[in-house]
Length: 64
Image (tube, rainbow, N blue to C red; front, side, top):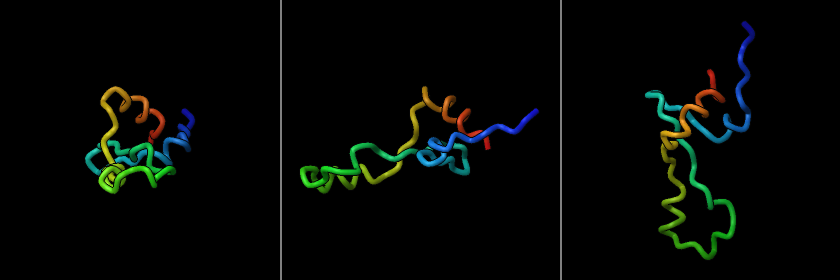
């Protein structure tokens, strides 16, 4: 059976932790930052877990 290819876009966006949790970054953090409060920008910096409904698809894109 041939090797599976990793989805390069998913590889750049998601990280799998040692306990198999999938982390992602928040959206709305790349531009138009002057109008956003410091509190909001700090909150958007942090990584969060991927929603339960999306985990199966992301695991398929990141086989290794």
